Length: 348
Ligand code: TTP
Ligand code: CA
Ligand code: CA
Image 1: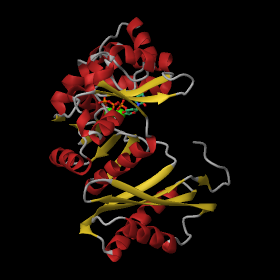
Image 2 (image 1 turned 135 degrees about the vertical axis):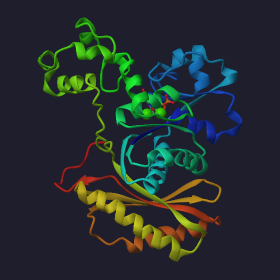
Image 3 (image 1 turned 45 degrees about the vertical axis):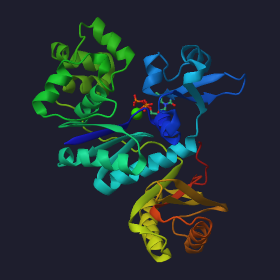
Image 4 (image 1 turned 180 degrees about the vertical axis):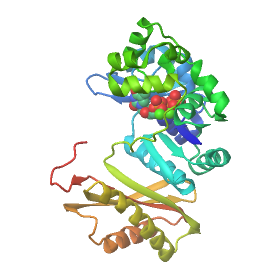
């Protein structure tokens, strides 16, 4: 079975949960360009805001016309914080499953024979640990998981069997199928296909001729009921974090450091695979009140994966424990500001 996890109104939900008083307000997360006070676009908006027609990508000035000032909050995007939460969710999923791809900042694909049984538990755990809701679709193919998740969002969970999946996909309009864009939809419409169930009417060779071998072949497979399930590649990223849960809440340096050692190994195997060196190191602490804290430092020269960072870790942990008196629930390590080992800086 395949599992598709997508966080609900992700950036806006994070901002909403940061401000418990604001849960009845329209929350608009904005990318301000700075040219004038309202220049820029909406990144995302909570469902209350969607109900008055505010959408991702809309100019902020348009959104303001739809949102009464007393009932709405316009917030600048805080990407580092959202990345932090994304890494936390990623780590929770990794603690529960093995074959995982993070497809975007708020989306994961999982391949697991028992994913059906574990999905509800995962949803609860994400809520418990981050206070955020997500939507999970589970189906015999990844395409089915994605499509059924889209139907039950937000805060949905659904598991479908082969028969239900087939029905869902066959009855779907072509433009609703992930992987089929507006241009392909339009061409297919001109060829006489509106729904997935119309695809078998089109000849495979004709599809390949029109759309090329890859897309044409993909459409023909889709038409014949073989649904794609490749997990794909991890999203491009300019940092790697691994966060883990401590056996119990603690301030014990030894326990913290041995967990960090484990996480460092995981993060470094990621760096090795992608031949990255890094210039920043951070230790992440999630305290018993579920707040996230980060201690970081930068290196003048990029560090390779084999270089020892025991001292640096030690310093960051002691500094944190000195400054903060809370018990720690989860810890993490993050490497960032990459250089490819070829010597060229990666572009962010
Ligand atoms: P989405 O998953 O597309 O949207 P969402 O999580 O806000 O809402 P939904 O409940 O429908 O899943 O995108 C994830 C995040 O990516 C989103 O919270 C903000 C960001 N984003 C942008 O910054 N600009 C965009 O145009 C879109 C679509 C998303
Ligand atoms: Ca989402
Ligand atoms: Ca998404």
